[in-house]
Amino acid sequence: MKGWMVKGPGNLELVSARKPRPAAGELLVRVNRVGICGSDVHLYHGTYRGPHRYPLFFGHEWSGAVEGLGEGVRGFEVGDLVTGDCSQWCGACEMCPADRNLCLSIEKTGITIDGASREYMTVKASHAYRANGCDPGLLASAEPLAVAAHACERVVRAAGGDWAAAETPSAEVAGVAAGLSPGGSHRCGAPLFGRGLVMGSGAVGLAVTMFLIDRGVVGSLDVLDVQPFRLEVASSLGARALTPEDLGGPAAAPATGAGGSSYRDAYAAAQYDLVVETTGTEPGFSTALSVARPNASLALIGFLPKAGYEMRTVVTKALKIVGSIGGTGNFPDALDLLRRKPEFVRKMVSHVFTMSEAEEAFRVATDTARAIKVQIDFGSLGT
Image (cartoon, rainbow, N blue to C red):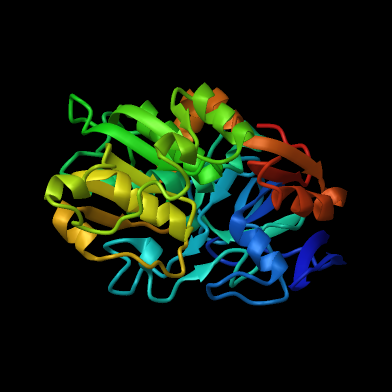
């Protein structure tokens, strides 16, 4: 088989490799689409900050069709359309029962172990999801959708809301991963948050926007970005598009704590009951603290190495800050949205390249003024 391997920073090479065979409990998958994530771009450029290794096949956002079954696999058939977890959890450590994305023995597909940038791959059946009936191209977006849904669920639950299922998804949607509870609609009646702000309208920011609007979590939703192209997509989803200037300029009244003559002065820029920060930048985090109302909730998804701010801002506003990583546990939410509203998800995919154009795909994925979600097509598969 052929596959694209990142051999080191800036070194992407098309290589030949032996077609794998599924071991017990595994699926052999013929890869269809692979999405390029910001993590893949950083891995390629040598700027990825988390655990990783070279050389490896990249790609943790993928779709494919089952071509073979390892011994003992149940719940899948040859020809099934599938996708799977990025987080390869162990299921046995002390963290897995609470959140498998925090597994103490975790490996990351396409980052610490080989990913999907090849014609064939093997995956654990316990980490895979049947998705028959979904668009094979859009299915490669299931992983960033699940990441967004996981963050939304965490912040909703932290604020006392309910992210439980209104209806249990079918087995086709829920997959067969043991112990994964299906997602569903927010059931608080009225919106849990009055005004919401999503900072950043990349793929994950748009996915968060989709879930907050689809589930009725917020009464109104704004999306902040500097790229007009991305803001147009956010507007088409039903959000109000904002630039930093709309919030008072790039600094947006930096969070400096309880300054001025009264606490009201410290709340002067506060507008939002919910802020979801996806940019991973220090100005973004500072702005998030500034525009959050007292008792507001902040969900942090972007990887921010460090930030300089006054901790008293969090204290004086009594803010609830929730970090979130990974999407394991929320693929049912992602597949449900893909089935019901494919036109929503289609807005995320800005470019599709052929397998031979992988190097150009990375160049375009690096250009945030042009691209949102870039995919590589490894072959046309039907459902």
